[in-house]
Length: 191
Image 1: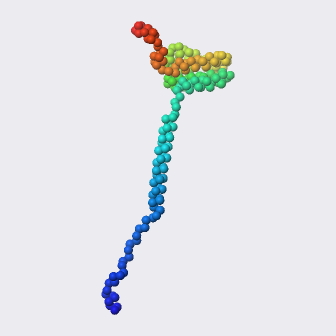
Image 2: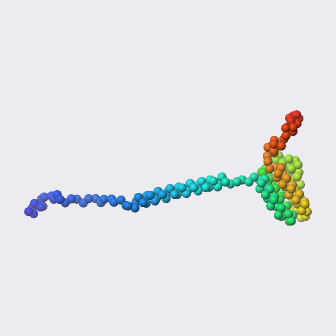
Image 3: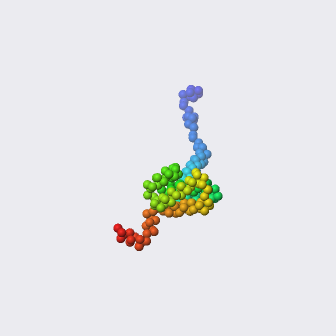
């Protein structure tokens, strides 16, 4: 009997099967959470980009003449101190001229600026003369210790406001709107 067993191949024993992959039950949860996290990050980035773009669009540029008028109004609080008042008013007007006409007023002395101003076509002759008188009056107070009255200081303030008012618009556009039909007919007849 033993011979039968040795020579015979048993048919009831089978070979070992390879391991079977069992899927991780948490895998789908991790895939879902990863997808949600990625979507959330994209939404946050898009939201920040839109908010930044909207904030950039909301920046309001205040025109130079408005800023100058605000600073001139603020300078009135220094009217009891002529030196400080003239410094504020003069600096405001110089900064306005630089922003409005790209004249390098704040970086120059009054004399240098007035020489440059003579070659400028941005101001009329009357405005140039008025500006020269204004700056020289301010320099007297700032550097020569001149003590003007409050009335004189208010006149300086009014001169600065008048110059800002006269120059806040383009001269060509202002001249076109202020020219009446009778004036334009007179101009046409002369030419």
